[in-house]
Image (cartoon, rainbow, N blue to C red; front, side, top):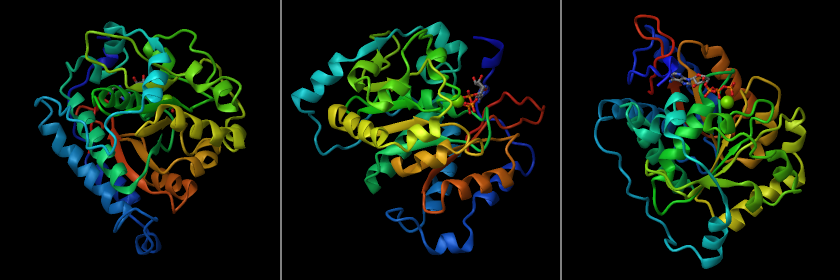
Length: 325
Ligand SMILES: Nc1ncnc2c1ncn2[C@@H]1O[C@H](COP(=O)(O)OP(=O)(O)OP(=O)(O)O)[C@@H](O)[C@H]1O
Ligand SMILES: [Mg+2]
């Protein structure tokens, strides 16, 4: 494992950081009075519940992962859906690279991997309860751990045997997932999003491997920077391509690895096409004002499914620790 991979399970945030971030994410009075459609009694109440459950998860991280798939209405996919999944090209799984690049859910050496299992389970349940299928992963600023979260969720979702997920690298200005997985030339995801390359020709799934990473997650990787991401996200083709992916692969869940919410307008432009957001907060780096401003920009009516406090600063000031709350 590289130097960066010094994960130590949950680390304490600097004094008061957790309270400040939660206060920033607390609903404004008008917002709590008018919860988002379908968000239950309060979208923010859900947010707090997820944060607290993740905190509990850290303590139980050494227990084996829950790999029981959630209840499904249609456990057996129609034959054409199965055939479509079987058609996808594969991504070779390199355990050493996974370790070096902090895909901690792959080998599961790190006890913190358990927190991702809990995040997955809570996310799948919360979304199924509300009939939501698409979640955007964002953060206020760069480098908070969005891609780290997206890939680790992809791996832990792949272990739900009866569950299908699609994970798209939609940080078109700074694609990262392909490099992290060691795929040199997965092709431009933009071509798929414009409808010039068929989803089944672009999406890939994990190759057979010894790490029990499943083949039921399709990844849309990218090797070309797109400066006009926000414009692309608002085209009719983009909406049609996402609908086509759902028709051809019948995913239970689609995850979008997005850019930071405070950089450009990509996250806002895509908002009509995702149901809710998962906000990754860089524990020691993100300010409450940035969290509040991000939520305001994305839109008061867009439910926040959860908030992940990543890389909390420990008492020794090591910013490369890891915390989920
Ligand atoms: N908990 C953690 N512990 C140690 N390193 C981490 C942790 N989370 C993320 N990192 C590392 O920090 C760097 C930034 O993380 P990542 O790329 O996931 O952030 P991002 O929010 O996607 O960034 P960007 O805004 O540039 O897309 C990466 O090198 C990643 O491996
Ligand atoms: Mg990223």
